[in-house]
Length: 333
Image (cartoon, rainbow, N blue to C red):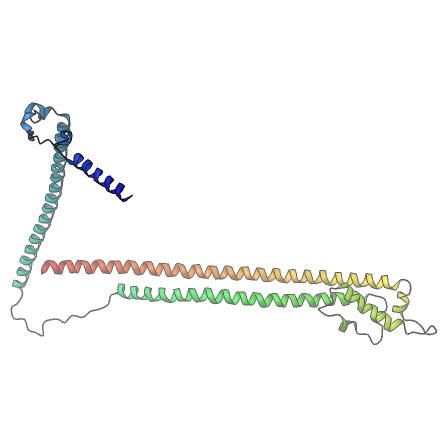
């Protein structure tokens, strides 16, 4: 095996030599040819010749755009210059008028001072006494009055509506209590018409009917049934029966049930009618009170607005006078 390996290696070596030799294989030898430089100049084409330059559509379009933009900018510049010149002229005219007016005032003051006496003592110079005019007093009065009326309006609205609401709650509760009392009285009056009920000794019907059971037929039925049991069941056959017991002997339960149901219905209807009338009167009173509050609020608001308008007018006039005085002072300076 070693001999074969050596033979294979020795055979591969000449093959490599043959492949790598440039003299044995001329097809793979590199050829060295000199490079011929190729130069291209702009003079070879007629692109920038005068005839082609001005007749090119793209160049024409570029030149037209340039001319349009240039003309537009020059036009805008002229407009701005016209506006600037106009402002400068107006400012110059104003300054010239101020100078002329100042010269006139100076000449008039010089003439007036020349006519006065030159020996003026310090005692003769009057002191400046700042007196408040009527307009200033009215302005301050309107401002203070507006503040006070505004506060009064707010407090009146808050306290007024709070008081009315509290009164409504109390009046509603009192109306319900009075309606319940009227219902109890109506029930007692109806039960008094039952034969022999008020003439029973030892039974106080007025103490048994109250605000919790006067409008319930079952409660009234239990009360009447209890009176019937206590007054009629313990009577001997030999003793005389009362009118109440004698009336209940034939079909007494039905009579008591009918009486209790009618009495409860009378109490409910009387309570509803009394409560409805009371609540209606409370509602009318509430509406009138709200109307009075709204009217008073509108009146106060109108007065406040009038005061505010007077204050603003006087303030505007005072500012206008002060502005004129400042202009005169600036002109004199």
